[in-house]
Each structure stands twice: as C-alpha cells, then as structure tokens.
Image (cartoon, rainbow, N blue to C red; front, side, top):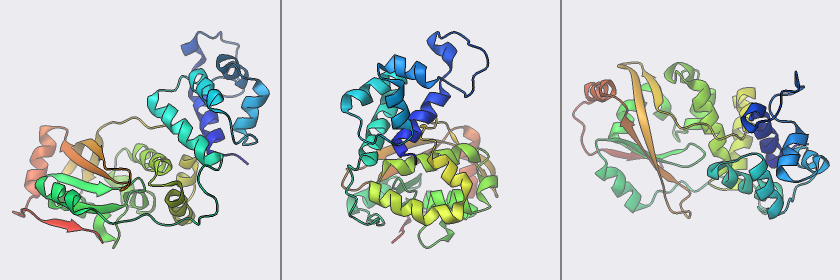
Length: 279
C-alpha cells in the first residue's frame, strides 16, 4: 500500500524529463520520466531504498535522505516544504489516536473588519479545505450567480467536484480541480484534511481520488470564470496566510483585465458595505 510520501516521490519522478538532466536517450522507456536508478544515482541512495520509499515500505526516511531526494528530484522551495510535510504525516508525526475532526470555522473579529475594509472588492476567508468562512458583498455578487453560495456551509472544493455547474463555470476545470485537491494536503491540519477527504471521496468519485495521489503543486495562473450573466471573468488571486492558530487565509480576487472590471461593475446593484459571514 502506498503512502503520501511515496506517491509524491513517484509522481515527481515520472514528471521529470531525462533530457533536462543531460541523460542519454536509451530508447523507449517503460514509464515516463526518470527511472528509479537515475533518481537513486542523483540522490546518492540505493535503488532498493528508493523503491521501499515509493512503495510505502519505508515510512521514516531521515532528514538527510529527504534532503538528498529533494536534490535528486530537483525540487523547488515549495516542493521541498511539501516533501517534509508528507514525510511527517507518513511517518506518524501526526498523532494516530486522535480521530479526524472538522476544522474550526470561527473567523476572528479583526479578520472580519479587514474584509469590511476591502469592500466593495471581491474577497473571502477560507481554509485549505475550501470552506468559504466569510466574504465581502463583492464576492457574493460574483459567486452567488454560479451557485457556490447556495449551501449552508459553502465549500469550493466540494462545489468543484460535486456540482455539475462547476465544469461550465470554470473553463479550466481540470486545473482548478488540481489546485483544490492539492490544497487538502496543506491543512488546516492532517486530522481535518483526513476528515474532509473521507467525507468527500465517496461522492466526488475517481476525479477526486486520482488527484489526491498526484501531489505535484499546480502552477499559479489567473482564474477564469464563465459567469452566466456577464460571460468570462479573469482574476488574479492574492492569498494572505493568517496566523497558524487560525489555519485560514484571506483571498482577494483582482480583475486581470479591463473587461473583467467592467463586467463586475455591470453586476453591482448599489450594495455597499455588506458582509455576510457563514456560521
């Protein structure tokens, strides 16, 4: 049985192009990317040890091995941090006796006040599970029209994978789905992420579970949204991490072009200063 760490190492190895490392073309390869022997050589570890890690038979590699693997796989800073996190949860760094539980949904008053100051912009508070915890009236103006806020406790990840409207709302649905699945590995905690995965997997199906094994950080690109009333909207996203005790982030959506800015203005109905928090 695989592990999050082993799945990530294997997925990253498969994504690397041999020619990028000056490796010779040995004809048709049995699998894409680098071979285990090539990565083991680059990392200074044995092929047998790398195989044990990928297959989940070694769950506690040392810090020096993790550093060597990061070098051998040419991981960037974000990927190295993710590798360390996966090693922690794979090796039992998160207490196994605590049952999975949903995260705290409370938003601090000062964060709510920050949202108020961002009016009439498009902004919301979320966590890595995709919960929409609080938002500006501008966010409701844009997202209310696509059905995201219909639920009592709106969740972007659940919407993407279970609401049939999502595939038409997001022209780049595959990329958005990749982002939401990857974020689940980043918190708010290993326990709450496990709780959410267990809840969502039966209804989201293979499109969700397949992405959970991918582990490769998706590229950050403008978010495209096909709004039923005004057509395509393109957004830049600024994400501000709140203190670790909150395990939340403030996300601000900024129009990526003039057409989007004008479309949002057409949507406005003279609502000012409204803030709705989801309990």
